[in-house]
Image (cartoon, rainbow over all chains, first blue to last red; front, side):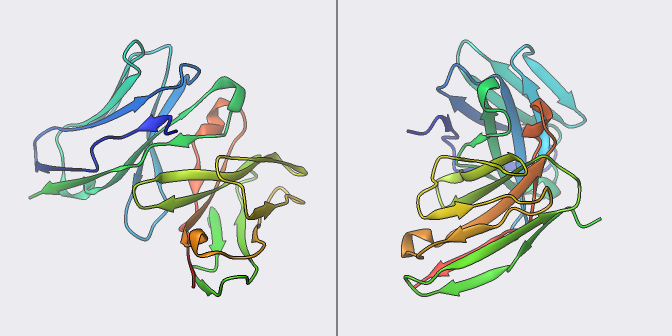
Length: 113
Length: 114
């Protein structure tokens, strides 16, 4: 039973445009959400996070939006750059399971020059 | 600054063999964990530790064993390798508390079980 789902395996956008990656979750106990980025042959790296007390968090070109009622979060990348081409994972955790992240399946983003 | 170091990077095993994947971190992190990455499945938690001497099971613990005798090291043991354990394995570490979710990952071990 997948508690965190990324239903789009891949996404292709033009350089300079917006990339929107989506993530849905089922466990209402999740209260902290993160996005990780992964290049081939490397480990994932932390990108941005959001607590359930917020509905938006920005860091430069990256913004994460959280819709608790829909159990949905999204990552916006504006403007997209070719170096953003990677696999993006969303992850979630619950207060009772600190440090125990549940990941989605990942979305492969390709940004075309 | 090494961060999280995993060895080996690649390994081929025969069914039934045992081996240990090594993981070491030099950031004095309390939390350490092991994930496996499979196509279409994302990253799944195998085992994790919130400090030396304390370990717990994740989503997919069967066939794996861990121990944490020091803060720095968190080895993952495959007791009797099976083809279903063919995967890429990632070790991660983090600070404690809610910041523990900001994991620092190693570069991975690609394991094939024939």
